[in-house]
Length: 172
Image 1 (cartoon, helix red, strand yellow):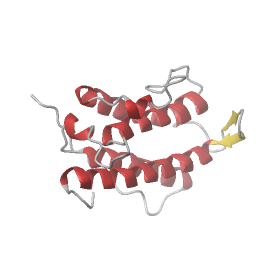
Image 2 (cartoon, one colour; image 1 turned 120 degrees about the horizontal axis):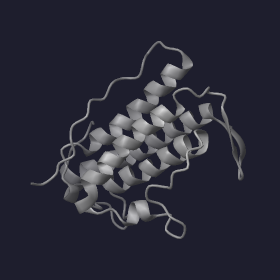
Image 3 (spheres, helix red, strand yellow; image 1 turned 120 degrees about the vertical axis):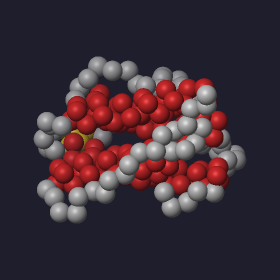
Image 4 (cartoon, one colour; image 1 turned 135 degrees about the horizontal axis):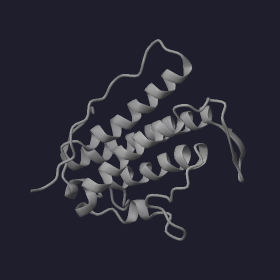
């Protein structure tokens, strides 16, 4: 049986809430939007690269954002000792270049799991929690939220175009 990415429900962010609930809501909206843009597609469709010469695919975006979630929230802010999911030294683009239709269900499930683990990892951290970057200096969790909301917005824009090229679906 061919695996098909499941439908997920997207819930609007809160329209009246405190800062943390608003940030959580916008981030969760972006998270569910990417999953929704993959819904109903097979692994073979998720690895299509419909915009040559780009090698970008929906599954590549899923794999990339899994690493980004893990790096910012679990590794940097929560201090968890977990390896990147896909990126490796000398293979930073592995999330994009090694997307495989046979692994689509595993990769989709890994993102859903990573999103949940990231939520738990930072749930009790104040927004003023600081991570010290060797390259940029101190960064707050508040900044990381906004960075991730922006990251999802960018990737979801890419996903919109990819999905439309794959099967003509728009407006997700």
